[in-house]
Image (cartoon, rainbow, N blue to C red; front, side, top):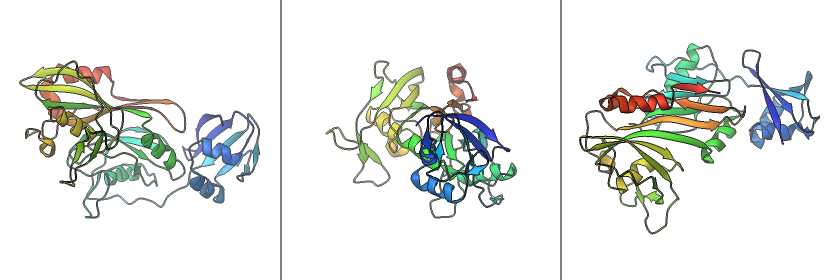
Amino acid sequence: MRYEFLGEKDGASRLEFRALEDCVSLDLALAMGMSRRSASRAFQRGELACGGEVLEPSSRLLAGDVASVALACSAPVPALPAASPATIIYQDSVCLAAEKPAGILVHGDGTGAPTFTDRVSVSLAQQGLAAHPQAVQRLDVDTTGIVLFSLTEEFQPAFDALVAGHAMRKRYLAEVSGSFPDDVTTIDTPISRDRHDARRMRVCRSGHGQPALTRVRVLARRRGRTLLLVELGTGRRHQIRVHLSSAGFPIVGDALYGGPRDACGLMLHALQEEFEHPITRHHVLLSSSVPERFSAWGCDAAEVARYYPRGASA
């Protein structure tokens, strides 16, 4: 069913939506991005209302009625002294995006090591916000760049679906070994796990494995290396690293897939994401800064930053 997002109210603790056709309130909740489970919880907590009246799943709404969702408040998140705050490049009441540095996990792995999610939690606590961020994407430990987080239980399913459905454009900077040819613009070889090494993925030229599509554009060449702009058509584990290595051009610093070692580390950076916000339906463009380790490319990398301006639009 169709709806119009009207905006945030009460200090962003409540969202308002206008129904554009007759419906029951459950259908509106599902259209707004809730799963049946999260919608059921929201109704049980009395979070959906219209005209001052708390809605039930079967409540009737007419076209033009304005319904609101009061976002559930989580328990306060304590500041974590061992974690520095994250660099946030976009934030609204239901999601945020932050720039991940190298050398840190996005999610916990059971060892108790600090994570990037910890840093985001610290940033939110410093704002006085009681939210538990949930990363809806992950980057490898040594990959830098944009990571998107959901901030609400109610709308977490909408962001999970956004990522799982490949309904966003994700672009990366990658420095590879060798002179990458201009005429190679797509790599579409399926990918599967490497049966001989649990750490690795591998291409499956026989056609088995999960379909994987990577688009490539040459930005510059220097000293036997090439700077690439890479766009994901799918989001398989290690996809960019595996595809470029299989083409004979491993990423610099990617020892796992045959790349030459480099003091700068893994030369892969999640530069930009572009998508339709699953709740507001607004166009969102997220662009991160070009890391210092790409500075040797000078104006070439800077040109990419100008082409995809830093910040967000929504």
